[in-house]
Amino acid sequence: MKRKQQPAGSGKENIMLLYHEMLTASNILASVFELSKLLWGSTDNLMKMLIVFVLFAFFSTIILNMYKGSMSAQLFLQELLRAIMIFMLVAISHIIDLQPINIRSGFQTITTLYYIGYEGIIVLENAVEIGVPVPQFLKGFLIKLKDKADNNKDSTNSMLSFVEICYILNIMYSNKG
Image 1 (cartoon, rainbow, N blue to C red):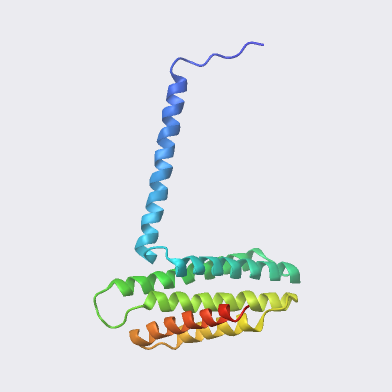
Image 2 (cartoon, one colour; image 1 turned 180 degrees about the vertical axis):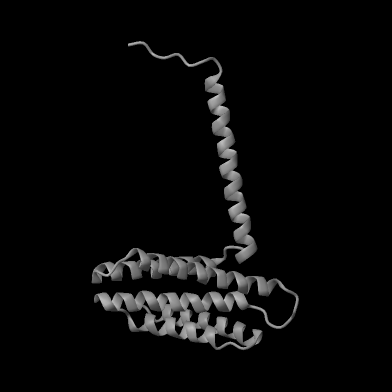
């Protein structure tokens, strides 16, 4: 069996084409990262938490509907669009924070905390509906987190709420042992 010979230079051309595609992919990836910085600022721990909580709420809703036998493509799309809207609202809050209008600061933090609490509550409600027991302290904390973020009226209260939330977390972890 004879092997087809490739024309001279085709190996080098393939390598150059692959290199060009890698550069294009890295440019796209760099553009996505730059866009995410513009929309949400640096990826701090709160933003990482929000990403995890949104993903968990998304998947727990899908799991619940599969468990109930009511999963559909429309439900999947609705949940996906709901998650996208949450990140759009956090981006709007971040952009407001960047403006030098001195009306409030900490919008992104408050909005992020609100949605962390909200998405966490969705996960807990989905777990309960499937029959998974939920620790009461976790449910209480997520409700308090959402309510604290929702009830802030100025930047002083928003920072106080964040400090209170950290204090609550500290108490929860210190009482575990």
